[in-house]
Length: 163
Image (cartoon, rainbow, N blue to C red; front, side, top):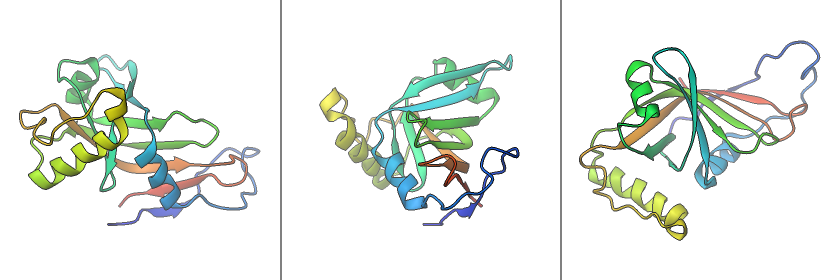
């Protein structure tokens, strides 16, 4: 698995002038794997932002989520695949920017990985998909390009770049 490049985000003077540490990518991955709710922001064809909460799973450095192609979010992706993914906690933030597209029919091994990850997280909430659930579509994949994370904003904001 390719590890992202670690850098510092650029902030205006006075925000984070003397950071003292970095967030590790393993910490970010753990948060992405274990979070229940994710916020996805897309842009509509008339350039208005659209934000929705989603359930999903982090598998192989990508975020997989499902839903109808008739939703506003899915229709937005047809015009502009650029998406921002954000976890719910603003104090210990994880924010990713990238592209989201229909995943098509995943190969059986990947489909089982995705379904198993969903069942692990969401069965207690009434959702436990089978691996063949997405054979006819309805699965989306978000591929990150950059990520921003911190546990203490003034101490360790860290930027990750996927190349």
